[in-house]
Image (cartoon, rainbow, N blue to C red; front, side, top):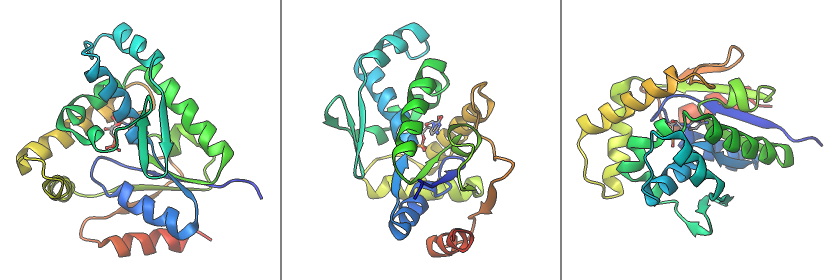
Length: 215
Ligand code: C5P
């Protein structure tokens, strides 16, 4: 049997990873969090104290960056950085790093290789439009900015991060703007993706909606 791919894209805080993880579990597929990969590169750049707007410095760091996805964890040059990649400094810079062509090239190659070798649920910004244009199923999840900010704020509070709702909202808006306006594979709904507005819906309702499309 050949591998199948399910692409789940959308803006920050739309619930993609929560939903994608559940779909992967129910359908016995591998969940791939592509945002975590861009976050890991960003973390490495922060650790190396490079000027994040200097392409050449970031590219040099990239050559020395090894990312592995093992289970629900992400490893950066052998270290589990699953928690660290959620830090506010990473939130602040990740979209700038993710704009760079060398970064995208390396991440997309890895993502395609993973999807070639196994059936996946992959979430991100450009999965349906660019990484896996032939994915069997494509979904674009969105929600109002208020709801997305509230969800992220609650998540961060649970993790013990001290930040305000207003800060979270402006960080999300900033990332969405950079992700939407960038030249390479910007955040946009694929023409053949199913749009789901998750505002006011429970996790179960969104999962049921998605499962209703998947045979
Ligand atoms: O999904 P998450 O919010 O963790 O993604 C962090 C950032 O990584 C996004 O804001 C975006 O800049 C970048 N990203 C991307 N392409 C993807 C996934 C994430 O550019 N496929």
